[in-house]
Length: 238
Image (cartoon, rainbow, N blue to C red; front, side, top):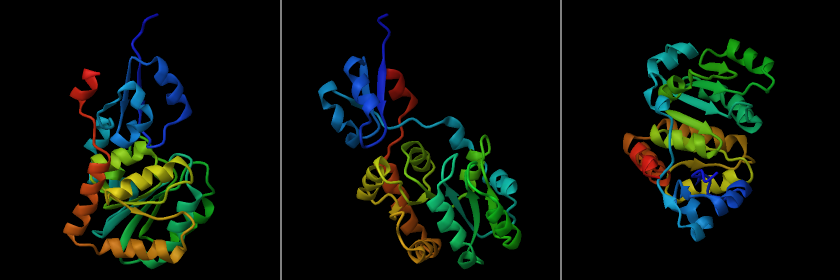
């Protein structure tokens, strides 16, 4: 059919599908120089990673209103993806009592996770806001967050880079660990192992909540360098 084809590599570790499709692609592009390494034979174009326009137009006020936050404390947002991340859910659940008076917590626990215990926790702790899943509200929720606790999927990392969010990563074993290691080389996030002790995670959150503005900026600048955002013009040139 002679239809032009673009293969774009996001993750630091090349997946099987892109590795195969690159052989017949018109253009191979990559989010970062590290993402491009496996495709050197195809002269990849390093252009950064695209991000949804809507993500950058969120309203912090709308996000706080949606979550039911009236306090002026900093907001910690825990993300685990649409289906949830059990490790992150457990870390956040156990950290809630310690974070009283320190932060408001928005916990997106995922649709496929047990919610009775988290609902009970929300009823007992007015600084904890449990939301199983969001869709169109996500840009507002992200805008409301001062600190984000997340896995290390490249799409989410790109959004956090674009929004310059102070980020604590707990990568899933596998390719996410390589994504997180890439971010770490730029000093762009705090990276913790998912097998870390609960005390380590809680103490790290407490520490970051009291960081100075220069400390926070150093981390967010590192994330922006690790994952540059592709401009619309650069994408069109492909």
